Amino acid sequence: AVSSDFQPDTDYTMEAHIYVDPNPTNNANIIFSTRDNNAGGAGQTGGWWFVSQGTGLNFVGWNEPAGVSNNTVVTLVNNYVPEYGSPTRLTYGEWHHVAATRDTSGSPVTWRTFVDGRLHQEGPENDNGILADVNEGLSIGREVTDTTRDFHGNIDNVRITKGVCRYTENFTPPKAPYPNYKKRGPATSIAQS
Image (cartoon, rainbow, N blue to C red; front, side, top):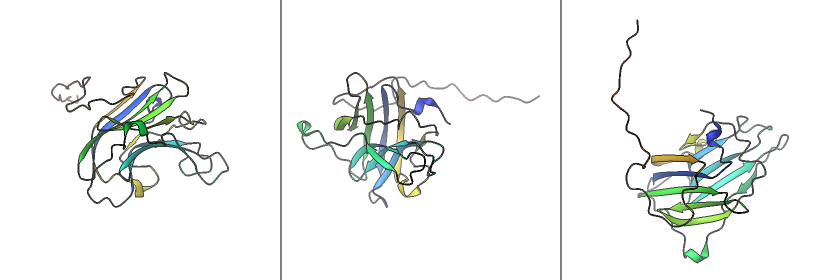
């Protein structure tokens, strides 16, 4: 469903547990993505991906103004953080907790990615209207217009939180259902009259 909740225009956290197949057939496995509803057309204004790429993670936004046929790719998180040593890598065939956060507490706005609770990348936002213009529904495990980026593996325990940057430094990833998880009551049937 289309919702402004999927526009990271304030503090934001998206996270999941992922398992990338041991021998994926593609290098880019989309975890979450969205874009405007003019996908691929000349009127497209932008979109974003949270993607497992090779053995790393990235959060990527792009912009294609009206009349321009080639995407201008903007990588929102594009630098490894040397003070944390070698970045944590994804190992194919194993479960990992992954997260991307948007932190508006400083200037510029900072994006971070995490693998298994360890800071993987961080960098300043270079928005140019990319994120605010997105009006397409959220996709999990795929990119709307390109099946070559479909996720090959499993995605579990998805949580997206608008208004909260949950992680700004290394943390212990959740190993149980998220704390605000509410178990629903038993199913009820409604008789038609």
